[in-house]
Image 1 (cartoon, rainbow, N blue to C red):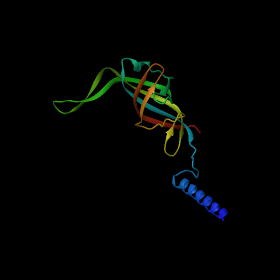
Image 2 (cartoon, rainbow, N blue to C red):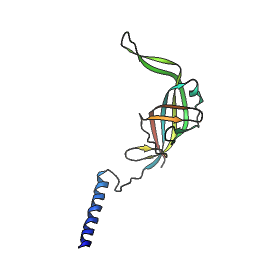
Image 3 (cartoon, helix red, strand yellow):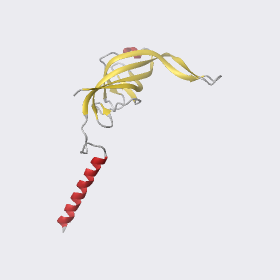
Image 4 (cartoon, helix red, strand yellow):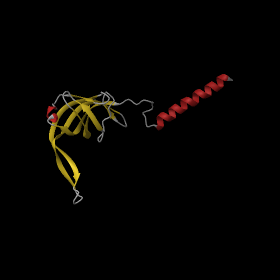
Length: 156
């Protein structure tokens, strides 16, 4: 009697696992393996103080400031005056003004990545998506900003 109950439970569990893996959009298994590729993405760091934006160089390794995960390698950088949007209290209009002594930097970064059906992540586990807030450290600088652009290249 105990053997029959055990066999029925095993079949029910196997059926539930099979049903779950099919309904979750996987490729038949519980863990879907991702494809390897190179991702190139652009981070816009905003409001960097003084001349710290000019310390960013191609070839610098970037690291997540909070979780110390690698973010990739700098390919190129473009430094621009720091801009902000403020409200004109007399007219109610919003105007773009320049921050004195602040700079914005557009950093193009490359990293090896793993692509699954729902996300692209780099080896440290950082998920790369446009609009993601990034807090990073470089060799001589740090900054915060957003991922504003990304490109993928297959590395088959």
